[in-house]
Length: 337
Image (cartoon, rainbow, N blue to C red; front, side, top):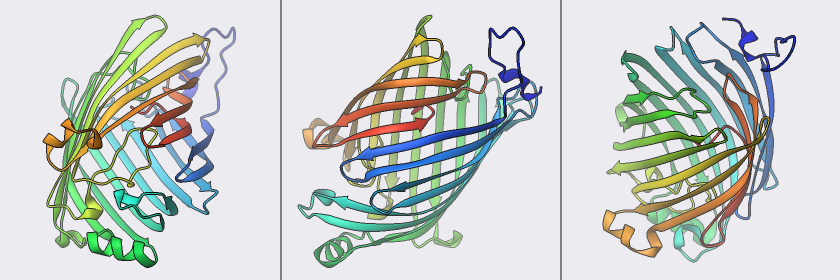
């Protein structure tokens, strides 16, 4: 099927929209300053039953003289039975922490990051997918003085890592990018090994379950449980808080899980309101989730705009606040899940 499936509904003479997308990106928080940039993407549908694929690039630059660039591909083909994702990332991130890793130290660090990731899955039954993935990262944390000594003492100096893993998924969503009905389950692991070119041997396990319910013509409730668990990982491979409103990597523990609710309310035409909330736990032993220090809440609200209905392309602008002066402003492509 041609790209004409994206024609705006209700038009007397539907026109074929451009397959190209240009989307502004913005993130702002008190710890990472303000980052602005954009995403350029190309939409293509391989066949009538497959979801539209996207190929593109994005880049951001921040007031802290940080930059990040990504080349990506997200492909659905063979009547939606095969899925392939590829991403290449490069960047430099200057961080300004007031209480780095709860050490009591103010820290200015620079992370130089390069990464490559790919994942392939194939349908094995009704809504079930099985496949594999490969991830390679190379990043170095640069710091000075007491902060450098502290990073060295806890083993957080960056590393080269390479891992392979199994991917198992279940997907009954009615749209892969903007679901209003269905469920999505994904479990995958990364076995990082020196034999693959890394510096450490350790394992990471990721799991997520998302549920989408249309409660009325204008209201969709999306719920997600997500977790990341490590085994024998160095500090540089530990988990961090992945809720919106927090800076990833500022707090680190071996394991993490969260529960979130994303309320999506249609207001008029393609405009909507979003209300996001959740609570996460970052821990070494799960018993720590009974204590306040391990718990991280988040609550936010904003607006959304449905840019391409058939492809499920949504732009969101929102403000999210967490605990301990953590908050953030986001202008992003797509829902958080």
